[in-house]
Length: 317
Image 1 (cartoon, rainbow, N blue to C red):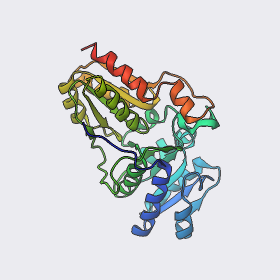
Image 2: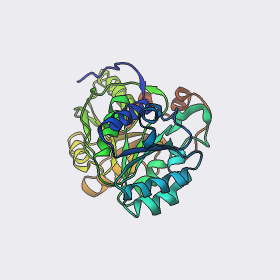
Image 3: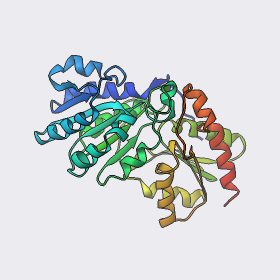
Image 4: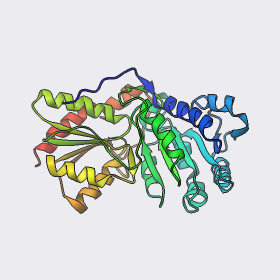
């Protein structure tokens, strides 16, 4: 069993900010737009070094999406930045019509996703954004797990032609993936191999999945852990091959079980290899105010619940 170590907790939004800053030095076609949240999105360094390529649009997210779409016509690669709620729900029509339908090369970068936005409460938290974005034809959907992977993803999507939704978070979380690692869009990462149950996780729940695998190992249960950083296009081959080996699956995500990773996995399995599956996700609900730790515990988005669901699904084989 491979042991992953937290090399120092960092926030994933800083991974985005540092990746964007590096892109600014490497690619003169990259431009950045922000909706009055430069500090929160860690876009300060890009703005300081490239003021001619940074656009502060104010609290006008719909205008930001239209501006970004227009900039692609001249060959620019626009990165938009605001909270996940305002990156999707508030501007869905503009994304659908001006970016997705028109197949514009816009990178929609969304911080403060899920419950771990914390004390700002339900109106700012969003638990349905993955579903909204993956339903748009041609939209690539990425949900990264730590600082290193978020930075790598930010660099990778600049070279990818087409609209991308990049989702990351607010709090400091375990940083455990390789520094300066390569990021392959649409390719799952098998973090550890196992034979009794497959745990498929995304975003902040990947670290919790690894912690659950350790707990299960102490109970004599061998868990395979897969990091699905790209929810669309989904690495169906990796999922099916693992399910064939272990015979049961748990999915884990900081998102509503409706429309999220779990549903995509369930569809894949139903088509190619019907397999018992349990879900770790919020259950058709909005969030509420509280610290990230309090909210993750209340809604069961943690290693303890992943362990319980793994033990449950094994009995269904």
